[in-house]
Amino acid sequence: MKRILIPTALFFGALTLAGCATAPTPKDYTRFHTSQPRSILVVPVINNTAEVDAADLFLTTVTVPLAERGYYVFPVNATKQMIERGGLADPHLVHRSETPQLASLFGADSILYVEINEWKSQYAVTASGIKVGFIYTLKDGKTGDLIWQDEQSIFAPRTSSSGFILADMIAAAITAAADNARSDYTPVAKLANEAAINYPGQGLPFGPYSQQSDNNLKLFPSTGSGQMSNATGMAVSWPVARETPSE
Amino acid sequence: MRSMTIISLLLLSACAGNQPLYEWGSYPTGLRLHSRGSETSDQFLERLKSSIDVAEAKKRVPPGLYAEYGFLLLEQGRSTEAAHWLAKERATWPESAVLVDRLLAFSTAPSETNIGQDDPVQAGASNVIDASHQHTVNNDGTTPQ
Image (cartoon, rainbow over all chains, first blue to last red):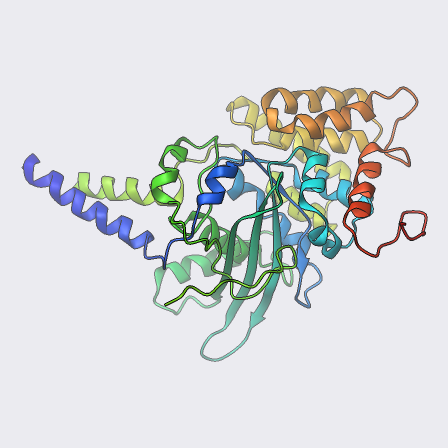
């Protein structure tokens, strides 16, 4: 019994792993591994949408997943106040300023710049729900180089008639949100963050406080391709067009 | 069969992150309410303290929590208390040293009780703007040379 059980278990395990690793071409983590950031400063977010609350709301969702990933994350409220009082009230200024200078003020190993490209409710007979879209840009605090970038767009159906269990769970989470005032889409934003951070070969490698950081080189290989992003658009903090892989 | 399920679940959790590293309490909720203006600084302060208590009891205090609390105390002019919590952040998380020292230097300055014109952070951040080689405007409304 035992002899059969182990291979079967391994098979199932492999299936499960494959289920979370159906990512496209892995990104190149060469520069990330050289940088090896221990800490992340999340700076005020650029909001490219019409929802005025989106930037502040988003900023409250990103600390937990980054810290749980194993990084020291600077206190978002305190650092935001400090940056704004320092004369950088406009997030565009923050995203355009020199990364090493800003990082040195806080002693940050890396800075995460996020832009919100979508943050809306969609009402349609076929697909009623919430749509959010972000671009995450992580730069080395010393060199200012890009070390990781990811773009996510997530649609969460509002109804529970989808017959798709994950969608139902999301819908329930949205309904259950305590502060479910107009335009508070933080539950969906959290899903986008998870999708951006947690995928092997695409997401953010584990930080030093995670016991899984030993697996980083395996899960996030240095492919040498120079391709560190899946983004289709350019970020204010990294206004460089993505090199299209020669295929 | 049960073992298989367990192993699969283990692997699944391996790709979604294991058990949470930290006890967050109601800090994330507080951040959200405070950012929307539906919670005052006093309420947020209280919430942070209770989140710290819960997390300390479980020995799983998340990064930034002490500093967030210390910063709010500093803003209210409670420098001595602020220094205590900021020092705690620094002792727990060496990565916070630069930030904490910056704030501590300020909080222990004898004549200051609140963040104001002489805030070193403010001065430092202004330098960032000057260094960013952009056409921008200084705090006093002049254009940097």
